Amino acid sequence: MNPGKMQNVFSIDLEEWFCVYNLSQAIPYDRWGDCESRVEKSVLALLDLLSRHRVEATFFVLGWVAERHPDLIREVENRGHEIGSHSYAHRLITSMTPEEFRTDLARSLEVLARLVKQPVIGFRAPSFSVTRKTWWSLEIMRSMGIRFDSSVFPIGFHPDYGVADSPLDPHLTNDGLWELPMSVAVVAGKGIPCCGGGYFRQFPYTVTRWLMRTCNDQGRAVMFYLHPWEVDPAQPRVALPLIKRIRHYNNIGKTISRLERLFEDFRFTSVRKLYSANWG
Image (cartoon, rainbow, N blue to C red):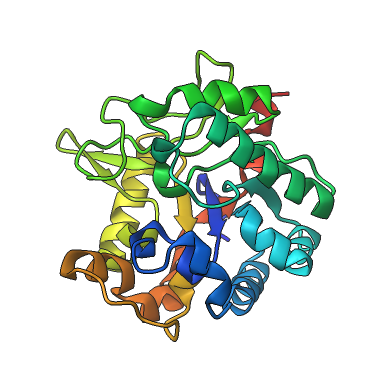
């Protein structure tokens, strides 16, 4: 467990393989119900992995999935993990009006409240879609009982998300909400993502480890994230443009073995364990 090392956050965006924004053109929302469900097996595998390494995590749960797999969400909580919201229908906030976002978030929170005992106070936007254009979403989150958001990516190069000049450290926003940004290591003055997902699969593990250690050495806990479909190499494959295909599928078969190494090299816990003292 490396007890002398900095604690980081391990988070999971709990969604089905077909809910991903990369696949939204091929599998729109109104076809989700026709797709094979694979989330339960993947989440149970992750829960067993977390148990073996005695890691408590934060699960940002999609409301649409929670409605269809209530026992799975209860199992996540029963295993000692924190539950947050990942919206209801995985719509990017950049594609919604404020009222549409409020309705979607309310539906997600209503579903989760029926399933879990702990209050749901955390949120992560699909595809990190809290950007300069959607700052208004923070006030809506706060008004609905959300205490922390983990949706801002402090980078400027990605075509779909990012706020290049956003602070790298957790901070209290003007709306009274804690923002826990996705992690970026500063190398030679440049910010390099080091926090999971596609970056974890694209980079060699040694590069990920070095970047995460750099982030820790710079005094910041890493906000690591992953999706259940990233540990499922047998999932159905969808035809995608080359760049998206590489970004989405590359090294999925190596994710579990890399996670085993990750848990040996770093300490992880949930948002509530690491940060909740900040918001009382």
